[in-house]
Length: 461
Image (cartoon, rainbow, N blue to C red; front, top):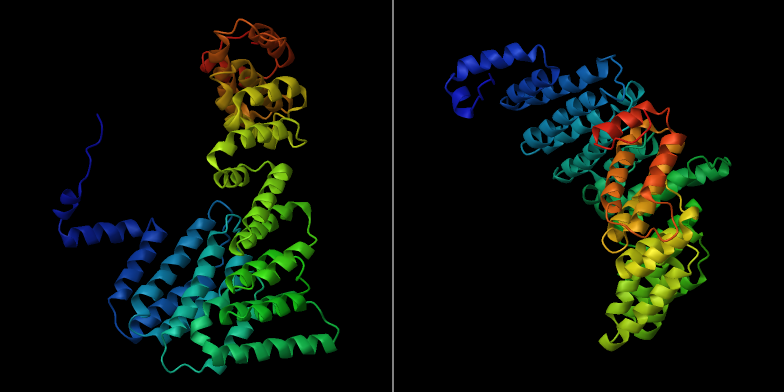
């Protein structure tokens, strides 16, 4: 007999006293609930009592010597986030300076928590980074703050970012520092940079350069941002970031010049091509922008680029342009990009590509192949089946038992399609494939168990 559901009304009827007793009793088996209750009770206090309670919560985390592995680190992240949330919502509206002091204390837990927790999923780091943003907002709400003194505090925290969670502090303190504080902070970073240059110590040049970039962004100063990239030795690598800021500043011809002089790795070309097209459009050079789109498409086969190109053509020219695009994709060296494009542009051409190049297709690339197989299933079932087989073969070749379920689903899809096929166009029939698979992978019992559970009673057990 199923247990009866407990409704809000049922719990409410217990009365406040009885419900409180249940919560307190259960809290001894649930550390998260116990902390939630402590913070809820503390939030009813006023002034120093509330601040002291939250300071004690921070100190409790600091004094804890438990280690949290990757499975339990979320517990620590939740504890931290409850404290952070209580500071922001219960202290800051009443006393932003006290909230800032607590958040300062909180973010300095970074060494403590990261040395005893496996934060593989980044949840603890996420809470600490959020607290840095809260820290800046709390100080911005303090009316009598000293921006120069604040600049010293920000510089100290920024330069001691041993665990990578304080890197956003300059951006977080943009409003709290104001122009006076940003000037003071820049002087501090440049002084540190000069001292390191004299000592031939370049160990923190990158961090100092990043700080100067953040200051430049806070001021909206593109030239200072470029100069900071130069200091950090990243001017060439940051070409896209520089050009985005130049575009926002309306310096279009300068942007175009930088883009045309840029020498970047192949994987960054797409980003720069998109920026160049954007600039050409903004300059009113529509024909050049279209030519750039077409050149980019020919290189990448990117569908968004083709769509943008086609949308700017007269209606009567689009059909011919699509046919050219199909021809280019069919002969393109980037097989997988071509398959993905053609699956949405011309199914006949996509099927032809699969049927003629099936032996060179890597079945491990399932994120590309599975959508293509699905697209081909209706009009070109043989091509779809060949892709499903290819993905299955890749899984079984490496005995990836964690992926057997996916392989079985692919074979189920292939079986449904195979039922109505009369002509296999020179490729092995499904019956021959079944025999081949059973003979080659007979010993993979867990795979055949999954096959049997899916209703595929093939030989092999």
